[in-house]
Amino acid sequence: MIRLQTYAVFSLLATITSVYYAFSSREQFYPAMVYLSTSKICFVLLLNTGLVAMCVAWQLVKRVFLGTLREAEVERLNEQSWREVVEILFAVTIFRQDFSVSFLAMVAALLLVKALHWLAQKRVEYIETTPSVPMLSHIRIVSFMLFLLVVDCLFLANSLGSLIQKREASVAIFFSFEYMILATSTVSTFVKYVFYVSDMLAEGQWENKAVYTFYLELISDLVHLSLYMLFFIAIFLNYGVPLHLIRELYETFRNFRIRISDYIRYRKVTSNMNERFPDATPDELDASDVTCIICREEMTTAKKLLCGHLFHVHCLRSWLQRQHTCPTCRAPIIPPDNGRAASAQQHGAQPGVQPGAGTGTPSSGGAPTENVNMRQAKLEAAASAASLYGRSFAYPPVNTLNRH
Image 1 (tube, one colour):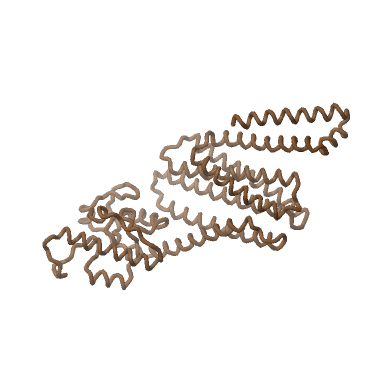
Image 2: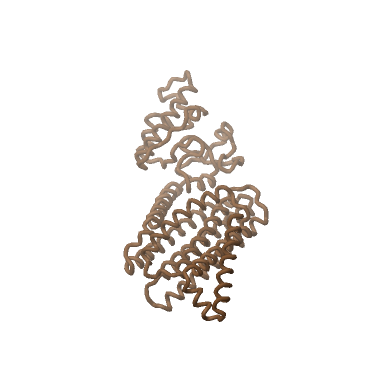
């Protein structure tokens, strides 16, 4: 910040000197303005002062709404900035016939506004993962997101107005789609923050928070994918292949595809949880730890997974939206089918249940035999998961398997 202030002071002094020289040598307003606009040195100084003014305004907005940045926020800002600069350079090559001073100013403003959006998303993530946040931080982040939404709407209205006025393809298409995507991202972040505040006011007892968050992210990815596809088609029909959109379009499509597959898998697993996952008996609750490791609260009723671990039904439902392995031992949570059930019955290796007397298993050495059976069942679950999902499985450590 000190370097920016020093550079801003020198830029302002240089601009004032050039303006004073123009008016003192020409003595009239119009000749002085002509000199300032035609002289390359004066033009560069004025353009530099405008960019410095934008950077100073960005720093003031950051200081007012966010204060001091955290290390993770600075790191994300540096990483995203380089990527966006490269994409903007590709965009400039597409719109090179529209290159002008106003275009350069709009590009700089777009980069600064995007940087503010990255910081807002990172700050919301920090607030959601912090146990106690001061009320001032909540007020500042809400005001910040409302400010960003207003800025996005103003720039979007300006770009759309220019596009409607000219009634032809121009660089306004680029800025219209960019600010449209930024506005939808701001709305999504704000709604996610509202979900967090609602859950906080309910003291963490809002069971449907994860469900609504999951649907929100799914809808947000669908909207972004639709906008990027429309943007890609519009640029392709009027200018050519938009190279700067290929990465964004691919990443958005990949995220949307992953969320769709997660949603289908989630619906498949949770469609009949009462049948797939039996209720834990009172003896099983007494024999195991009655604390749910997901919510860290005591369990009076619980669901039992194939690996034998117990969890709240609503905690398990929320967990399945993000992960498909047991929170304790990382064994895959696979819906039991007929083939696997028959295999489990043949081996007598149902997790968490000791073999009966008629299974042919010797009664001596009961604890080692039970551990072997549990290990065999989990190895079968791992093999079934690898064949079902087509990816490798990281086996849990031995001490975790032998815990029960």
